[in-house]
Image 1 (cartoon, rainbow, N blue to C red):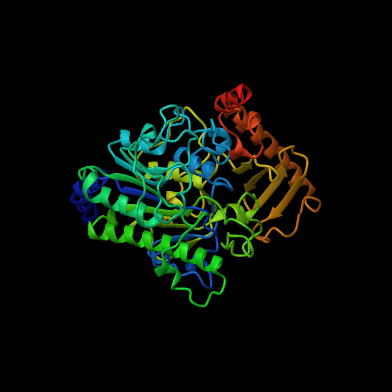
Image 2 (image 1 turned 90 degrees about the horizontal axis):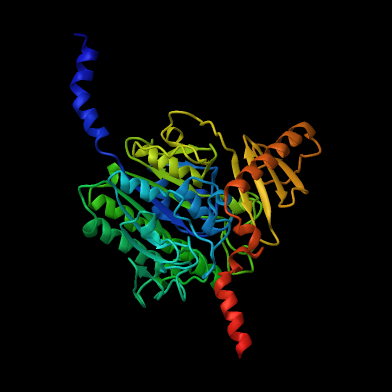
Length: 467
């Protein structure tokens, strides 16, 4: 027998053992964190030592995108692999809105739970208008064994929040700050609440640095030279989130889980405000646009992944990756595949993360649509080319992101053939997405999240007339 063949036979039982032990999976999602808000992304002031160290342990994606320029749609795409207008969560969801992640959407935790995973969610939920109400699906209805969540923001702020619910039970006022509280819940679940015989899927979705924010004084003390207290509060808030992330990574080390766990860190959209005078002081790293804008600054976000032994440390990759890719990628890591009965917009990018290939084919283009006045826009990226337009499909822009990542030069007139082809592709793709999703976006307010449950609104008006 040849030595190589003997080695293969010798290692076969070990290979079978690895195949029988799927990895643990974690998605850590920040809220309103800009592409330029981390030290490792080049921010000159904000201190993020834990995420900077984490980036050196795996891959940093320089062209990582959220699936929307606002929060709820981005989250729906992560859990379903489907672009938001297709899965129905087309905008941010206000309390009492009828918009929700429908049970007909097969969510990632449900599939993983069915395959033997223990599942938990800790942090912001924001995927229904009727939170902790049986009229809408709750985290447990989408496959989570254990959950701690808020409908939207931590309230009244990140300090001592009073609106958290654990497994359907309101908790009242909690002592502490949001991100550390969310991570401590996740750590407690890892240590004592999950079935240790099962692999686990854990979603940790912090509220930081979404406004209204509040930061622990110990993190504000790290920025003594900032005269602007609003800026100090924001930067400390990012550091607070980074500190919580570091606590979670330390817990993985303490429980000897780090080597068997794929961790992906990202953000739900770009930074709030104008970056200088309004409360939002996050950075796009110089990219055009911010939250609620489909230019790069509104949708390009940090993307970091670590999987020891599979993802080479210290890797930097410029392949475009989008939030909807996490669904098929995490399924592939668990040796599972998405259902073939529906369109999945994301693709498995595990071969990219692990360096096997430089890019993967995309049957569906990178696509964004934001139904919010006054920035109701549609965008699509194919290769290095990005096309944008208004919702009436009348006013277009065309950019080459390889040559012009800041989207300063509209090329639609200089590239008429390319523009015509991309415009036709965008129109057709948008129509296909519209045809599949629910028509909530047609019936509800163009301000998106401002729309409320129509039945509740009618009852309110009827009561007012009686008075």
